[in-house]
Image (tube, rainbow, N blue to C red):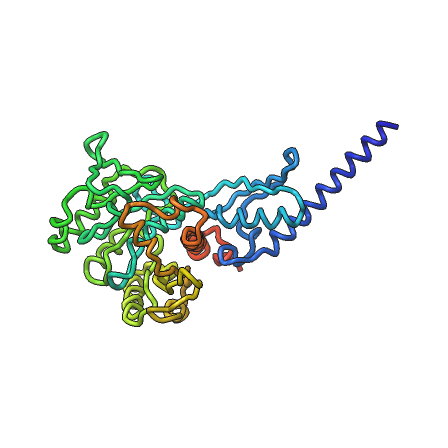
Length: 368
């Protein structure tokens, strides 16, 4: 009698687990977002589920980092199946372009057609956003004439070392590996360098730094579209580029020039990030579009690229940059931190969808 009861309970448990797994599979198959426009299961390279005590643990292998969105998905699944659901994920980021720089999988250039649009601030917060999403990241300050990364990382005055007398050991700030000409020479000296001299210095910084194993290296490019920018774009094995702009018409014109420059050197533009899109009133929450509205979306549509995100004009962003702190680390659950993390996910996803051979959007060769 007890044996029959045990068998029935065991069978009922298996039936319940199968029903839960079916619900989850159906949800994940139908799930769509900016990060997963073709569905979650379409990019998931492996998936398994297991009941561990009273929790359902989903193990997955994904091609780009997206911790923040997986947390949201887990919350929705927890509500759906009325059980605590957790993800245990391995990210298998692969290089989309072959190069000889040891330790670095993918190089992403962050550029702007003009100065003053928040390029360097966006580059730093994007780097920290990618770290928060689950991958290893470095940043290289290619803005030879005005290196601001040391200040933004709280490393101003710090000097890198070398363990072998050949390669420079990069500095580190809250998990972000960094190298800048500002660590090696005074700002005033760098600003008077001529183009070839600046290009040579940057090439040395890139190739003679002892980079650790990095999924992404963010390169903060000098503003503008002149010879130095063209030279750097051609010298560096960049996987893809981001263009930072504001909604202001004059900034948009320069952003279009920046995209044209990358097209000239056959460098894919992953998308546009619109900075200073609006100012949110502290009292009532109203959005004021001080520099215009919808400009980033218009030029993204015109260039057939992606608008990866819109960032507000917020004093906290400026204060953190000046103080050498990062808002993503200072307030990881805050609205601004979540905006940067979402943009970071979009960047990583677009690099995969546009350029990774594993992507479901990659055309397959069919023999006739």
